[in-house]
Image 1 (cartoon, rainbow, N blue to C red):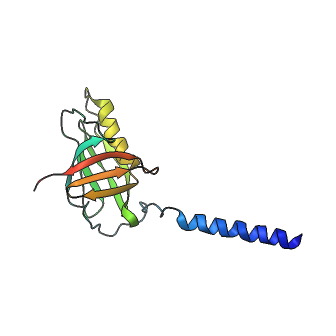
Image 2 (cartoon, one colour):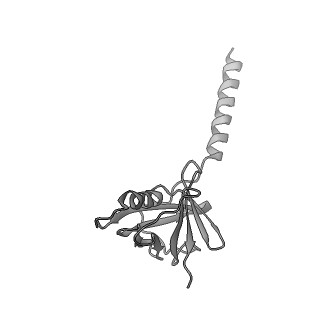
Image 3 (cartoon, rainbow, N blue to C red):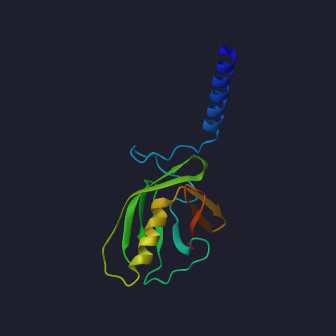
Length: 150
């Protein structure tokens, strides 16, 4: 009886270790002073292309953002100026924090909130040529951006 219990305990421990090894890497730390950021996402202007996989938004201004080397984010949600912080991690992890916008009256306020929500929920990114795609923690596509020319 004791051998069976020990065997079951070892089996359970092995399964737990296997599951831990398959888990996602931790989120980039936003509470620590960031080293200077590098990579294809940094120091580029990214213009909104799609929300989700196929929805284009008509906004007074084109939503866009830039992440600078110090992790500062600036841009527009399509109606209001946008500022915040970003951190990059292993395996194309990305996390935005402290996002704030001005509060200008806008007929497309709901769409502007969706743009900000996309950034807040971004978990991982993929770059393909001049396209940047954000994925949520569930690997669902949140939206796509296109690198601005020059």
